Length: 282
Length: 263
Image: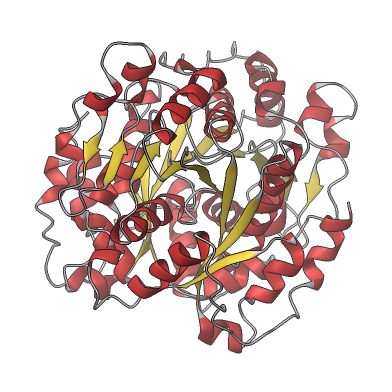
């Protein structure tokens, strides 16, 4: 697969009415590690800070961001409707139930990823950047057409990874496919400190030793995330949830606040002798 | 007689396709069947890690298809079960390196020599999915009891039906205590939505993370809680009538689905 060309920066405007927003793709390679959950919750937490945020579901054919936000009944138009000029962008944007500055642009459910042209995706993200401070793009699993389209319009990446060898291997592969001049940031999701202590799960240090990415956040594994996802209310809005708190920290850090680096209380680092070795077998 | 050609698929990633492929394969091999596991996740292979054979890969599926090695040279025999084999995916190529016709021919060649060819499908429904399904004659859809996983599974069930592939369902990572408290969908809920015969129910077990990291399918260890469950699924797959373990039925989340199921 060819390396993805970085998105060309738009020509600077004479007197911009508002600064162009930041387009960030949330990606992972492996599926089921928490891309959609992270997109929804980082978006919700940014919006709770008063930022104008749009979430773009790039998983054409297997959309889920609408469910996680509880907005599935309000979706009228989707990304492809906008690209194919069957709907205006304003009509396709769905406003969140809880947060006034949070919007969703849903994916088409009955179309294929190959129906989206990369150039059209870049133009769409540019249009969104003119209206929003943050454009968060929820990338599909894998590294096929859907991945390339999701990355094309962005200028920054958040790589989500769970502390499992297969997820770390896939994340490493994805980092290698991102433009060379990007500095992707890492979110380690679903950490169980008790398992790390017993030596049955990779530690954040183990993951960091392989991926070598700046750490944006660490999310603990808690059953309340499943409940929140099924109910369609982002856990980032739950004041007393440790998962919610971890997402709010990520949002604050993205927004430029000086939040100390995430720490996880684990007595000893994990000790998987395999970790270093399994990257040798390419 | 040619062996069975079964694709393990899900739509959504991370629901347990690769873990299911490895453990079901090991369970069938433990029953004396000749089994080939095929990793079709070109570019993001992981089945080799789960089986713990990542350092023994010399050739891969793409090299076989391109005629750069013999099929038997690329097959890795499991040291614990001599009748279990892996055909690994290529890691530095992409999914368009193989066509549907090539995959179909390759799986056919493997099935001529094996009792079971289990095809580990990539996440999504793009080129990689179409390739994996092209080689199969039946499917196992893996899902977890979460709204997003079930919606994706529904989409995949539709695609298997379009191709007239018979299929059954494995509901993975059930937490009975969460089902009992109404915080997780029950197997009945999942079956009602997907209208697909259930082949197996697998409880959530944190040991899976550890055994996966160590590359040891848990079917190997009789002390593992899940080992007998995979063995039962293997027997059911071979036609034995073994009743499913019943879990309490909770249906209050089912109504969430009626809207998008109707659409």
